[in-house]
Image: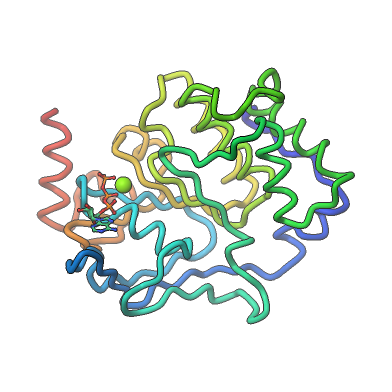
Amino acid sequence: MNDATPRATTADASMSRTARASIMPLRVEDVSFDAGGKRLVDHVSFELAAGPRTFILGPNGAGKSLTLRLCHGLLTPSTGRVVWEGASPNEDPLKRQAMVFQRPVLLRRTVAQNIDYALKLHNVPPADRPGVVDDVLNRTGLARFAKSPARHLSGGEQQKLALARAWATKPEVLFLDEPTASLDPAATHAVENIIDTMHGEGTRIVMTTHDLAQAKRHADEVIFIYAGRVLEKTPADEFFSSPRSGEAAAFLEGELRW
Ligand SMILES: Nc1ncnc2c1ncn2[C@@H]1O[C@H](COP(=O)(O)OP(=O)(O)OP(=O)(O)O)[C@@H](O)[C@H]1O
Ligand SMILES: [Mg+2]
């Protein structure tokens, strides 16, 4: 599975990321987000260039999921803006990115139909879709569930399906919100392999996790969020050996104490 690539078709070759200019970099410019009378994301600014894997770390309630949703365009900033520098004015950058949630959002359809529908939304012609669907299901070990209702899958299987669905659309950027939080070690390993493979194929990975060993294994850089603010954006090695902020040091120590 590690070196797997969904089969290229004429249709998706024409929409592959290599065929077009990148939508990156992503610029988050002084973004705040308010809800329920509270400022939950507080003047956050950072830029993500193509390439490295970014892990967003921080304690519960820090604003990691909100930040991912703001980046992905699922939430509108209360102030500031999120800019995809490379996107042309007449395209929807949402079509070039995907997001995988901790609790996958699956359609009340079969496993195969969930992927087929994502391909349809990406304008892949009907004749090309079955090949891509079979391919990603095989490569994620889900082929035997192709005709099962997606909502009957276990949590780990649903997580793999969410990734398979994202993989099929060849996103330029993939946001993942705690994608392995409820998975057993084997499923975690499988999901990490898929993410690694997508990274190897050029998909920009931006993810959150509370699994610090996982972050150490896979992160190239860390954005540390605390109380709605970005306290640092640091190369991963440096973050884990000598975090710049006292809050991050305490966070890492607290995690170690557990
Ligand atoms: N729609 C909303 N209305 C009010 N408060 C909200 C809303 N959405 C999120 N929050 C609050 O914003 C804060 C940040 O939420 P967020 O989900 O981003 O945290 P997180 O860093 O992802 O935490 P966790 O590690 O637990 O997933 C939390 O205190 C949460 O309760
Ligand atoms: Mg969260």
